[in-house]
Length: 307
Image (cartoon, rainbow, N blue to C red):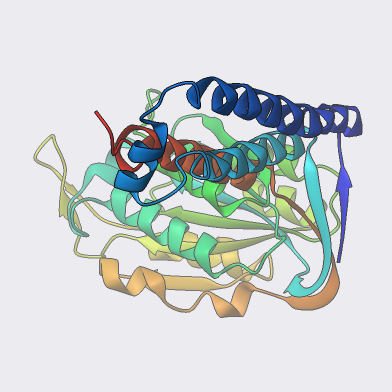
């Protein structure tokens, strides 16, 4: 394992650490020298049961750690490791058309689809790049290719019902291909009720095969259908979803309950040993924020033993 930096110039800010240490000891010496001028200083120290200046070391340690984490974070720290990971890059494409409001899968098809997508993201090994798309009459990119599961699941959570009427799977596949760019192993995880009403399956299959894209499909909905907001019954179309998967060397999953959306993803994860890059900047910022909160709590509550 080794580490690299996207912006190594920012590492110069680490020189702030010895400067802060120097300022700390100079100010501590000055404050202690000033404090001993008061005759009751030793009595205060005996009452508190400890040297009150020693407590400040904890704050110093926290400040050093916070600065280190922030500087390394803004420097774009990337870890390189060898791991057993998927050889594919994925785009999760979620149908957010009006028919996904049907409640044959509780609370509705869209929420069940988002739950399935997040479960899939959780199952992926480290280092796998994932993009997120929502599509109705048109396709929208909610998340660019990223190997951070936190950001991927955040993008999935942000998907809401589309404003353009219809279900245009072809546009979703085209948008996914643009996200995948020049990557050799390209896979789409398409979650939909299969109600294709813009374009046709033949057009989608030809485009996917021409661009070497595997489409794995997850059917979110039941054949019996569910009630929509217009008091009509919306049925899922299993044949379309099967056709898209089988004709692009993908896998088809038939799901009729929300709990079942967590199953059967291992078949589409082609694993191999390779070097992966993990951007840890976000995790460093989160750790720095946690330390800031702890330091604030200690300063305002734990160490305020004297009025």
